[in-house]
Length: 543
Ligand code: VG1
Ligand code: CO
Image (cartoon, rainbow, N blue to C red):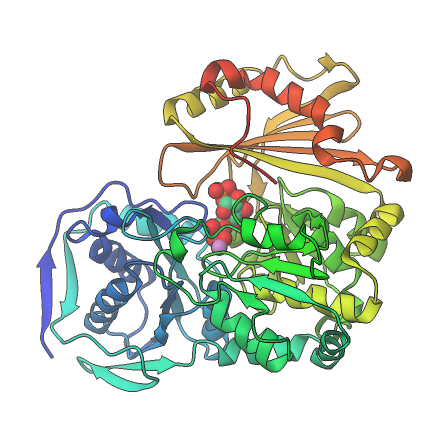
């Protein structure tokens, strides 16, 4: 085997964001860009010689090329074996499942998740540790530090490995095992949910539509929903993963999953609709003519967990990201279990799950999951809902309304302003921060500001501190406005404004969220000088 040590110059922009390093494909195609980052990962994690790694991605443009590079660098860095999903494909939750099941040292996931793909789209890479979860900040910070001083990377000279057939291959002395990308994950799902009850539901006239958005979950959804659960062929739409996601934006929300939305809001709509994102970790849940807010979905899943075999024994606790609504907190309080509030990003849930403190986790950004893996998991959430529906025999809408009637409704919405000039977005945040001292106590109509801060988090397990995680304006009545800049975009800045108000009055709970939140929306615009600073008044995406 011949190992080449290649001289390189460091890049100064390889700082992982909310979920790994995400850049335009063209940035990753710059000579040595990917190689440098991969070598920085391996230098940082210092895996013992002979360790096993998992590698897979969401199938987007550049996935295959990147995997060949990673395999050759892994072989030159002493790994003994790499498990690769067939065709280079592994959804993010499936990668987490495989890392855990085969107890590997870690894994590399290639994805820019919900960002568009194709030659002009985005690409991404992230490292997951042995627990199957995204590397915590202390590791991503160390990878970034290493990337800024890297002078060499190591790579074997060897032909590419054929990834389309399962089997074992040798690459410069390292074993490459091409594994079934779907089976391990599908088995895990079958162990958690009542497939018999769901099969009975589906054979009794209940209809559903699952939109894989031309992204990674197509093969998983076909195997699980159409094969194992017996839904008719065609239940999974856009089910063939394409390198450019059919030129779509694989983000399962009301704006980008419009094909599904038209089906679910059309005549003869199915009983249940769902979609997932580029890498399969997000989910959107719809009933007939009805949208389930992801924050409510987390709360509902927690409240109904006892209906599923995998969670019938009870929940240790739940966790939600700070901007996620407090709906889950109410369920946790009733169940008498703790509810943790973490910064945005799944990496903050890992320690809590490893320590056995929480079973379920969720984010308002269409992410829900549990300790079955260490990533959020789109299909898992869909199956959880199907299990609940099979057991309760009610419509999605009735289940949500009944939940609000019991717990009250945390009326919630997120407004995204995408593609803002970075300096305008930073100026807006700085303007908000200049009001830290003056805002508390101020009154806006019915709302009086109780607290205004920049959220920081101390991990209860390892004591690590994460600062600057979002500006929170909390009012005396518990309503909130949160301002954050996205950490996953690749162009300009995205401002997210999160709005939440509690409604205990059953007569008012069914109000349209935008209407119910209009007062808070106006305050958010005023406090941030949104129009003057960005020229925008209407969000790009409302969820
Ligand atoms: C967004 C979401 C966050 C999520 C992250 C990764 O981050 O808000 O909740 O964890 O994406 O999801 P940001 O920094 O853009 O707000 V995924 O499906 O892109 O891996
Ligand atoms: Co994703």
